[in-house]
Amino acid sequence: MDPELKRTLEELRVLTKDNHQMLRAIRRDQWLGFVGRVVVWIIVLALPLYLYQQYLQPFVSQFSSTIGIQNSGPFGFPTYAELQKLINSYKGGQ
Image (cartoon, rainbow, N blue to C red; front, side, top):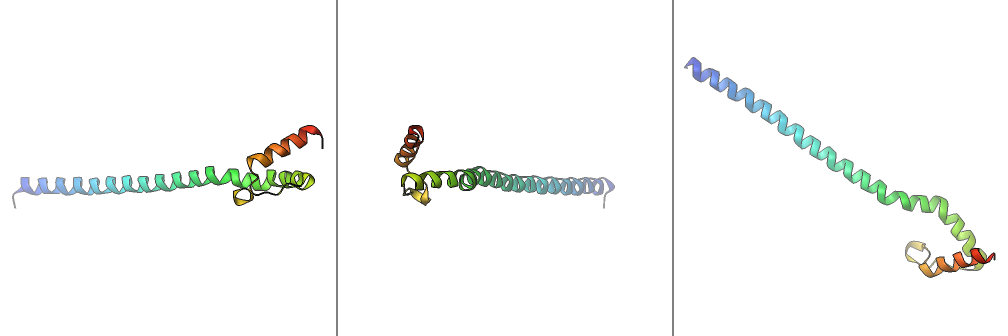
């Protein structure tokens, strides 16, 4: 085999191997970025619900039971009218 052709083939093999490694790194980074974005959005969307359940829901249920409001909104959340009634009763000092 011609030495020039052999050298060219070796360079091509090295470049192909390097290209393959770069493409694998790009795919891995894309996958990790996607997983990271999914995790961040789950946290962004779930954190307010968790905080409501842990910190605000006991206060809302305490005030609701005091003035006789039943949570009838979706997922047991109070509706806008119920929240307004709760705010008005709080402002009124009841």
